[in-house]
Each structure stands twice: as C-alpha cells, then as structure tokens.
Length: 368
Image (tube, rainbow, N blue to C red; front, side, top):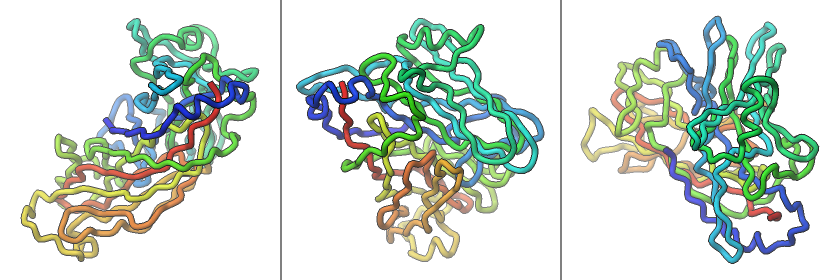
C-alpha cells in the first residue's frame, strides 16, 4: 500500500473558535480510476495511458473502486481526538466519461465491509446520457447534513450502519461500453456524525489555502499496463515492481494517492516527483544521459485529469545522470485534480520499482 506521511500540526487548529463551521470537519480522500479493477477481468482489459479505467468492450462491465482509508488522522495535541474509523460521509462522488455517440447509463453504489463482519450498501445512483463527463453523488448533503444514497432493500443499510467501524469501503459501478471511470472521492466525517458545512453542492466548496507539503510514495506493484490492449500481457507485477517482459515498449501508469485534505479542496501543486527503475538486461553501473532519447530507459511524465475530464501532462521527466532515476524539475500546478500519477513509456526488460513525490496538502481548517 502507499505510505503517506502527514506532517501537519492540528493542535493549533483545534483551539479555534467552536462557533466557526462547528461540525463541518471531514477528511477529503481521493483516488483515481487506475486504482479500480474490473470485477471479472478479461485478457483484453486495459486502462488509458492517462490512468482512467476504460470499458473498451461492447457490453456493460462491473468495476470496483476502493477508497484508501489510511489517509485519516487524529491528534494527540492539547485538544486530543482519535481518528474516527466509521463510514459517516459528508459526500462521496464518482466521475466518469462516456466517449463517443449513443445514450448509455452509468450507475454506482457504495459497499462498506464493517467490523461486525457484515457488508452494508447504499442505494445505486444512476446517470443516463450521451457523450461527455459526468458525476454520480453516492453520498451528498441533505438539509446541511451528509447522507449515503438511500432506497429500498440493501439501499437502506449503509446510512443506518455508518457509525460502525469500517474494514473496507468501495464504490461498485456498472460501466457501459466506451466509458471510463476517471476518479472518485469521499469526505468522511472527522469528529462528529453527519458533519456539515452547508447544504450546497460539495464541489462548489470555497477553495482552501495551503502552505504545507507532504511526501507520498507509490510502489511499482501498484502500476498497471496502459494504452493498447496487448500491453497487459507484457507487464508482469512482482515483488520488485512492474516489469515489461515483452519485446517492444509499453505504457505503464502508476497512480499517486494524495494525502487527505482537511474538509475542502485546494489547488494542488506537485514537485520533486522521482521515478525509480531497474534493468533486467543491463546491471552495469553505466547509465548515459541519452538513454531516454535512445529508448533504453523509461520516458515518464506526470499526468492528471481535471473535473472537466481533460487530461493534462508535463513534459518528460529529467534523467538523473549515473543512477536509474527520473526526476521532475520545477513545480506543477495541477489544481483540483480527479486523479494524478506518472505514465512511463517502458522499454523491454525494464522494471518500474516505485515513485516518490512531494505534494501540497490543505491547511488545517477550523471547526471542532
């Protein structure tokens, strides 16, 4: 799993006036489509080179998208509080992209595996329409308070059991043909149940400021073949990372899960991204600067989706002379991203071992 180091000081924030947005606090956690998987994998499955999981077939497929719950934190400061382990949510949103002509329906529900060994479900939420980017609000604000989508049958169980300790939480989506899951997020309440900061659209939040940076780390095992359908057969994931065992270069995408923000979005910046790789066929210490241009080492770039489904990327990361590393020079503003990560065009015999990156995290927000 990803190792996320939170170095924020929360004690000062907790000393703020309790009258200011007193119950709004939530962990805003994001994951990208590259962290989803098809419920019933097929040999032709692939993701985009930009990291979206894409149903390139001709029939509907079930996709499972887990939420990384490890981003939640507490405080042992002056006003101490423990990290809540419940599923109480202010909002939960899945972004998708229907590509090409034709009306299709995308639907998602949440499934929570709880400490009592039961699984609790939200109702399924659907969207029917033509091509373009859309979103599904699986949990949203109701009269100022957060609530999981409700309905009949299993659709009533999650909201009623959200205070139970959670072992796992994921979105389960029915994805029609020529449709991709771009990214997803959840705001899980930090301190009080049914946390709230108003009854408006959670995506219209006032952008919070940021002054802190956190390192994040991704193992190569979490990277996947991308681009062409044949690439999946070439990429072998093992204890050292993701290796191209084929005879031609393939795209490998590695998602980066950011630290959780405190309650609100911020315009994220990313710097110091470093890709670590190894070479099965060349174990000598020689590592020329021209290896990227010569296609004998990976060519990698930072890639991300924004809320409009527009994929953006940096130029190629720089080769560090003398070592098997690629590095991001400068700082990139990626904004209110849906997903970001690194895509590497990887020659045969090379292994993407892991990635480290320095990303901004929101300032600690007021409230109790």
